[in-house]
Each structure stands twice: as structure tokens, then as C-alpha cells.
Image (tube, rainbow, N blue to C red; front, side, top):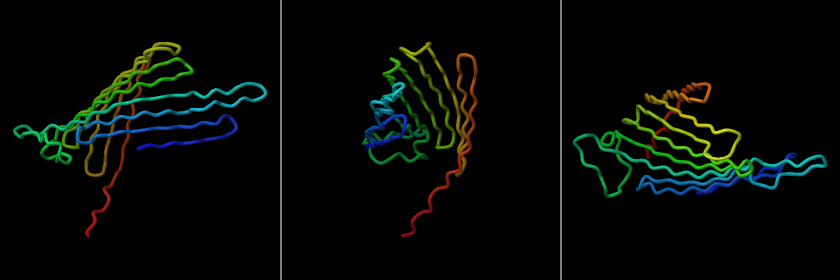
Length: 178
């Protein structure tokens, strides 16, 4: 899978490009994306530089069977949530901001029980470059009941805490009777 976006305007010409790869039987997915790529634009007074960003990420998803059942190691179809209620997701990302000389590392994890309750945690660290070293931690939880999902997240910043709450309504499409 791949995609691109081109934009032009008075400030600068830019492009964004992304590529993804996935292997569902292994629970793996990877991607790389570049944003704000281009030469910028020079005017009579000054030059506008684009804030180019390149990101690469890796995700691994695993389902664990209910206690007392054996896992299916054959790599068959997606596991049934009633038989595999425990789901784990692990994420890692590297972000490079070339013009700033900054590198950002991020990692996160999610535990989901029976598609209903989710617990999340993560960290983000400005590993190199930038004006100052910034380390951020986040935690959250989600609750899904029928077509409603309520999510809460807490992000700890150096001198503050951000609270985020969202409510999502996502009805399932009607099933085909054919």
C-alpha cells in the first residue's frame, strides 16, 4: 500500500509520501512516511524552508486465547474474540526532523480485553537535537459498548498534564442478506 500528496501554494511546493507493509498472519505491520518534502520557495525577501519530517514505525499485534484453551499456531484466520479475548498491541516509532537535527523516539502498548476494555501506555523522547530534551509519558483507557466507544488519555508534560476525552459512535454496516 502506498500514497502520496502534492500541494502547491504561495509559500512552498511540497509532497508527502508513505509506504506500509503488513503480514496479518504474523501480526506485524511497518510503515515509513515523509511529510513536507520539497525545496521550499524563495521570494525576493527571504527563503521559506519546509519542516521536513520522516517517520518509520513498527507494530506487532498478538491475541492470547482464553485460559484453558490452546492457541492456534498455524497462522489461520483472525482469532475469534470469544476464544481469544486478550489482545496486545506493541508500537515503536522513530521520527527525524532533518532541518532541526532532531530525532524523536516513541513506544507504546495496548491491552484489550474481549474488544470491550482497553488499557494504553506510551512514552515519547526527544533523543537528539531540538531546543531542549523533552520526555513525555501517556496513559489511557477505553471502553466500548455496542456502537459507542469512550476513550480517556492523560499525557504528562514537563510542567503540565493534558487530559483528553473522546466519545465515538461507529455503527456497524448492515449485513448483506445475499
